[in-house]
Image (tube, rainbow, N blue to C red; front, side, top):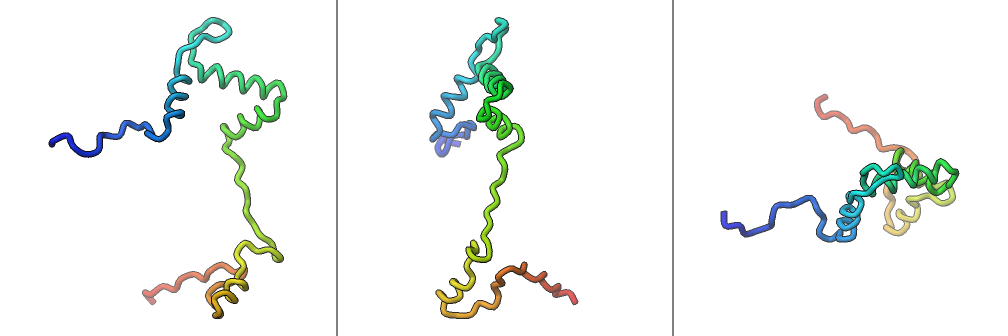
Amino acid sequence: MSGRGNPKPTGSKPDKLMRDALILALNREATDADGRPTKKLYLIANAVVDKAAEGDVSAASFVADRVDGKATQVIAGDAENPLFPVDALREALGIKLDRISDARPAPEPQSRLN
């Protein structure tokens, strides 16, 4: 092969220069409070956990989000303000859309093997 074309991906994201620089900096060697070698990433993680243990609510929330994942936000409408206004859609289209139901799930498909 001539060597032309796209180079092999290296795993880095070319549009994420700051991300790459931060990852390099986080992996640099450092020393902990006891003089033992460690990485800067671990120093930062320990500092955040220590703040959370001291009662810093934002640090505790940060730790919980990273450990358990962020809580999912439910997006829901109500009877007066539905997320999908079927009646308005019917009116805008000028036709009655019998296949769209306001609150019922779609029926199960019928088997064609019968």
